[in-house]
Structure formats: C-alpha cells, structure tokens
Length: 90
Image (cartoon, rainbow, N blue to C red; front, side, top):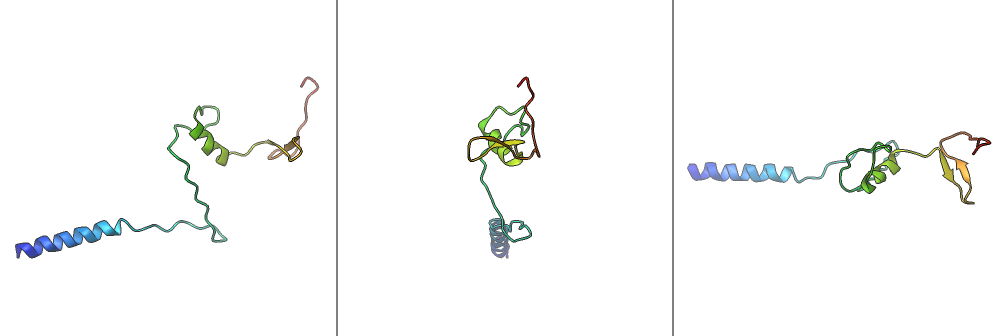
C-alpha cells in the first residue's frame, strides 16, 4: 500500500511538472498576426530623459516616435509633427 501511494505521488508530481512545460498561446491582434521581439535584459527606466544605457535605448526606440525624421533625400521632414518652423535665430 505504501509503495502504491509513493508511486501515485510520483506520477502526479511528474504530470504536474510536465503541464508547466507547455507553451502558452500569445494574444493576437485583429488580423491574426503577432510580432514578438526579444529585447534583452530588463532596464531601469524607459524615460528618455533618465535613460543612460543601450538596452534602455532599444526599448525607447520602439515605444516613442520622433517629431521629426530624416527623409530619403537627407532632409528633415515632419514625422509625428504636422509642421515645423525654424526661427530666425536658429
């Protein structure tokens, strides 16, 4: 009887351990496509003003968009900004 109890306990423990190894389903957006990006280690902050690490810069690049961008001709163009002006004093 004691051997059976030990055997059942071991089988149940093994089954429980194997269920933890299963993959999880990822959430999908409206069109059914998911993009997963491995970003590396956790960062201390994602505040652009306080970030001092390359790892933090990787996160910030994906989280924030620029007001201006450089177009294919190498000129400054609006990105998130609708328009911009350069003052006379530069």
